[in-house]
Image (cartoon, rainbow, N blue to C red; front, side, top):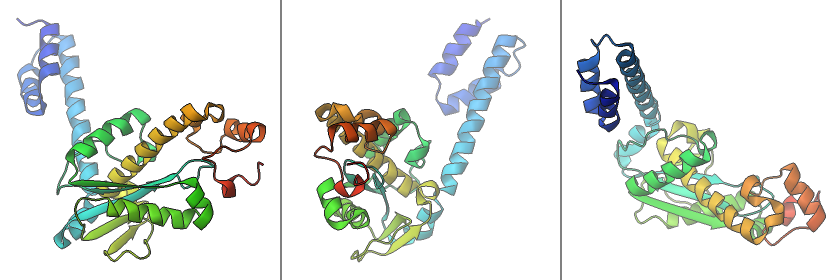
Length: 251
């Protein structure tokens, strides 16, 4: 008779199909340890099935517009911070692309975002990124800078989409048909993917800025107006990446 440890090793090495087979094989084993192992594996498969149902719901807009051609999700990160750029992502995914646990980047841990970033970059047909810095934000205001970053991200794609799914906005001067979706990063896998690309790209930039300007705590606050960050602005004054129009109340 196989030991519980041996059975556990079989499950650890099994893919999804093999896991189902192992559950069938060991479901009649009377040992409590094996029964607990089978129960955990069954629950994991149920969780996976629910996740796939959630992702299918998030494909609603992709399915609705895929007859037009390539569907591209657009989202941004960094509208609200006191420092750093605003970053936009544009992502074209293959039809029925499966990226498990993909969601609005704000609902994900930093570790999960990094993992998803790599998977999106691997599986996407095309990814574009647009970055607009603080000087330009001060010059034209954050909304226009947001649009500019999105246009730059679309222009960076290696293929031209036929339809854009945007998170809540309509981008001026873009001739590609657009569908603005309120809370789109929670309702569209393409927009969710774009939100992850934008967020991770910006967070990585802010980590680099933290090395240059360590007194502001950019590694932890990412340029947002935390109490520590505001205190540092008052103590040291603004640095080169602060948005002057955003910090008038603090300097």
